[in-house]
Image (tube, rainbow, N blue to C red; front, side, top):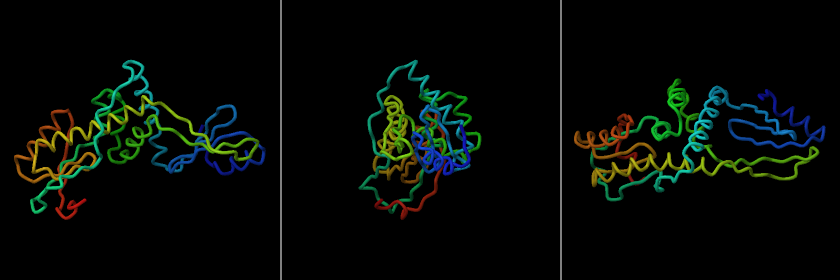
Length: 233
């Protein structure tokens, strides 16, 4: 249930000495009544417009787990990694995987084609929402608990471990592609930052990087970069 003014509702609940729980995030305020009814106040209009995508992703992942059981995530790799011996006097180019986490979630079967396409309808306008849909999978939630209108403490509600493992797999699989490219490039590898890899700019290297990315069914684009922006980071 959506509400427009969470502050007045909470003030009323406290005045009437009701039992309830409340959770606040940058995008949403969630209130759970003593009967289990959930009410939401959306603090971000863009987030509000994309709320349907959270439901679609969660349903897809629940269906995947029901059909396939638990998964073991790809081995853990860092979100950012640099070649400490790289020569920064070289000309550097970056190649970025388009919609990396979202695309890998689809290619691994965690989300359906319908959900995948829905998340791309508004292009970059949905980027933060797509990432949030995946990053909140299985994430625990912290609520402030009130009894008879009085704050009594906090309660952490754990969601789903299996969903957390799927999000880890999406992330680490992305870095796995980065790592494979880094090994192929050797000394010409500069660094990777999440889903973008930087390397010595030659036609041969561009072909290598693009080839590996496209072998996985992913797409990519060039990101121009100055060496000074990457040096020693």
